[in-house]
Structure formats: structure tokens, C-alpha cells
Image (cartoon, rainbow, N blue to C red):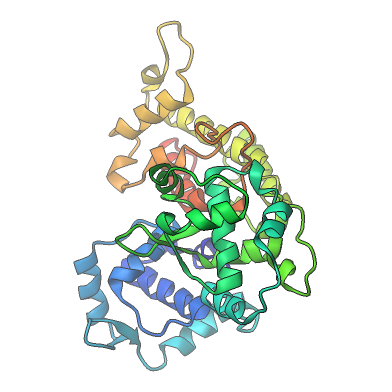
Length: 369
């Protein structure tokens, strides 16, 4: 299951630091088969989950003192104490539908044992790769290498030949590094800038292109707006938690969730931006500082300027709670992405938890709770 969905299902925003660490370790165990946990390595999982990472030394101290962990290894790694996994399985195991696990490492292992029966030019053509952005091309070429060669770590410096093989012009390395930094499909894995796929990215890519390796069937059309990544009852925002405060906002929230489930991710991102702007204005109004976001002619400032005012305001409470509203506000922003860019599930998932946390704070500030 996607990490972002696990975060929501566990209501992690209400948990203590130690409980969040324990749950993220459990997720890693279920998804990747990890049994030994390093606080240092787990900090990257916090980023994937859209959660603020704790201070490393303080977290190490808490985890070592917890009766739910035991020392495991000379490097300070930990494992679950006896009985803990059973209790976590009882509470959350149903999220994996009886324990079925699909992980990035499992996919890579399976890929390495499959016959090499998909040529790079055929894959590039099936994905319509020539029309993709630099970051999208890198993601797809990394996926091809994973499926064909079982490679799990990817670095910009090692990708020149595969661009050529796909009939593409390799981008300038510094530009490519900038494109993939912070990309929702990857997590950093080395000081040399190498990255690894997140489990959710592998599932999404398998759903779109994996069938090319299953009996040679052609891939689905290369559509970033596939609804597969947001099936079922997935929500960007909990309607139970956020709705019922103001009718106009409720309608926006319903639109956000319905477009996300339908795979209309561009529409979802646009309405998320609209909702954030509306709640920001209500927050400034409720605190008697609306004049700060009005220009000399009386009109409201642009969205970007309102974000800057909110980030700098001590009244709204955002800086004090460590919430990066500037990062969240980029949802729905096409600047620098190119005229043909379309949003996918990963673009929404990358900010989903942070977006929810920002809205919770602003709802409180706007007295909508």
C-alpha cells in the first residue's frame, strides 16, 4: 500500500514521536521486509510520508529506551521486541489485505529473474518518451533498467548511454540532478546523489508498464492521469474531519477528493490551490489582519504574495508549528514544468500530508473548528 495512505489510516498526526517512528518501521517491515531499523535511514521515510523528521539523536535515545524495540547490530540498529509485531498486525495488518506485500525490492528481484524481452526502443515508443519532461524521462528509464537488469540505485552520471539507446538526447547532468531532486518517485540513497524508487512509485509504474514484461503484452497508453494510483476510497482530505464547517469549503473538498479518485489530478491540484487560498483569506479575516493581504486598490494580493504573508505571520501559527506552507502551496503550480506537463498521483501524494496539516492549522486559525 502507499505510504501516504498508511499515514492517513493510522492518523499519525495524533501520534507521539515514538509512536510515529514505530509505525513507520512497521510499514518498512511490511512493504520491504526490513527487520532491522536505523534511525538515520528512517529519517528518509519521514520525508516520503510528508511528516516532519525528528531530531536524530533525540529519536535514537527515545527508541533505545522504548520496551518495544531491542538492540540489533553493532551500528545501533534496532528491531521490534517480542510480541510487538503481533500487536501491530492486529491493529494494522488488515491494510495489506491479509498480508499481501508488494515492495520495491520485491519488484526489483522479480525483474532481475525475468527474461530480457523488451527492447529499449520499443519501451521508449510505448511510453511516448520523446514528449516527456526531463524528470519523467529519467523516471521511465530508471524503471526500464530496474525491470531489465534488476538495478535499484540510479545516478544521473550513469544514465547517458541509456538515453542514447532510447533515441533521446541526454540532458545536462546538473539540470537533471535539479529535476530529480525532491521528485516524489524517488528517495535519496547516497552522498553521490543516487536515488531509489519508493514502493508506491514502483506500484504505479508496474500498473502502467509492467504488462510489457508479462508475456510481451503492450503497455497501456502512457497516461500520467491514470486513476489506478488513487482507487477505492482514497481521500486527499478527510471529509469527516474537514467538512461541515462552511458550505463553500465543503464543496471544494468534495471536488478535491472526487477528482483524485477519478484520476483527474490536474483538476484536483487546481482545486487544492483554490481551497488553500480561500482558507488563508478566512484566516487573515478571522484574526483582524485582512488589510495585510489587500493591495493599495483594495483588491486581494496574488496567491504567491498571500503565501509569503502567511509564512511570515506570527498570528496564524504556521512557522511555530514547523509547517512549510511554501512547499505545500506549490501544488497546482505549473511554473517551470513545461507547457505539456500534466499532474499525476505522485504530485498530489508528495504534498498530501503536509497540505492536510497546513489546513488543520488554518482551520483553527480561521475559527472553523
